[in-house]
Image (cartoon, rainbow, N blue to C red; front, side):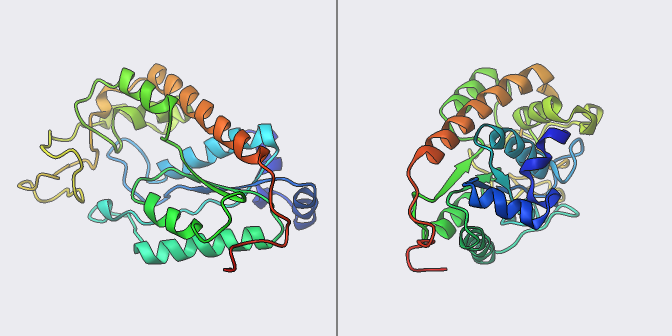
Length: 260
């Protein structure tokens, strides 16, 4: 991570520096990105974390936000058959997100944006944040819209996919190409269901069989596609962040709707 982003990550600051920034009104960003989740033969297990922190660093700049340590364990039940992949129960993950968010707001931050890279994590995060004032807390999915889905649809050549696929691999080729081993990229078999169940590397008779763990065709990925996808994603995210930060916050003492 570039040195000029260090001032945004609280783990690289002293506590009194963080206190001053909070006092001055710096919004908070809480990234969510797995560090122990398979991403095929060609991408590392911390792919989601890398994306979450890369994106957080870039959306923090325009609003001078503080970035909290990434939540690297989450609810990822679709990947547990693959070595190294971990998953919390939905209830445990929901409680984790709620407690961390409550601590951030309770520490004086007036605004908190939760930056989510996952899919199975969306519903638990929504439930965890529903107990807070919506003026102070916002949940943003990195693959939300409107620009990113449109660009993704225009660029995608694969017939199916959503994990370690053409699009995600293209993103990684753009932001961390040294970590991508395209020689090992392997497409998953075609599936008949739009949304598969938990993937499996062992049951070849399952409709969700994927030897590599990919769901889609990462062999079609290119850095050029990744650059276009990242540009659309950042445009969407920066628009969401700017609008959220611009809204008037409640007084600092009103942390939640009566729940901490």
